[in-house]
Length: 268
Ligand code: NAP
Image (cartoon, rainbow, N blue to C red; front, side, top):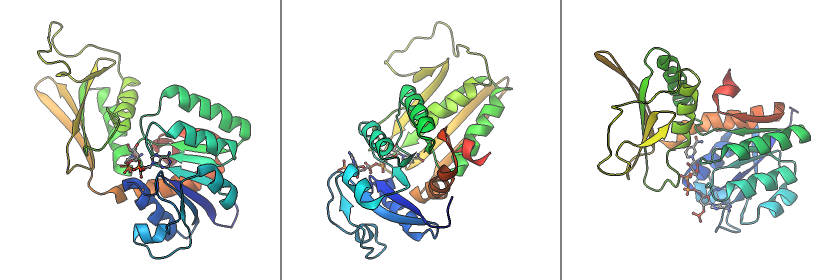
């Protein structure tokens, strides 16, 4: 990393997460906001939209053009699962390091991006959850599964979320699956009277998604054993919970090659 500030373009910068991210970058002495891209906001000062005050950085709807004009080191993307692939490939074409919070990314995309990043000898980060408390919840859950292998995950999010189950729930299930044998849970003859009643099945673990106004991002991992249950719960009650992780990733990505998947792999 050089002494100069890391030049950052935020994509989805008018979204719920994107506005927080833009403010975080503007307030971080090691980062410089050089571009803000969103689907339908053009030529408006990003500082006005985020409440930071005038910055001279104007929104654009054109990602490639923004890269050419602003020559960034890092793209931070919080958009949606339908556009993330195009955005990352555009970043890779321009040699810009992707830091991705957008969830719902298929495994094969992650592998393909890792290959390209290694070829280009630059880094990228994809984290389904940038909140440190959520990362700890996932680690503790993986630890607990060694001793209490019967587990169900309930994740709760605001009702505007596009993907289900959440990236965090899938990542939690993946981490638990590494620590326990695949097993069927519940009664072998159980029958769903309404389709979906038992939730999604990940290696025998059940995942339930709740979508309601009022929630931000919450998850419970419930373990059941003989005569006991254990619940590990994390609540993001404000989107600022994700910001220290995002800012850290934007800095650490400068020193890595290839793709790091999951915040836990950046802090260990
Ligand atoms: P949001 O409020 O809908 O924001 C997404 C923004 O992206 C919107 O302003 C949208 O514009 C814009 N957009 C859509 N297509 C675009 C394109 N092609 N180019 C540029 N901008 C585009 O959603 P959110 O709640 O901020 O969440 C964004 C993503 O972050 C979701 O995938 C969510 O699951 C994820 N998330 C991740 C974490 C984490 O820690 N990793 C935490 C919270 C959320 P329009 O409104 O005009 O479509």
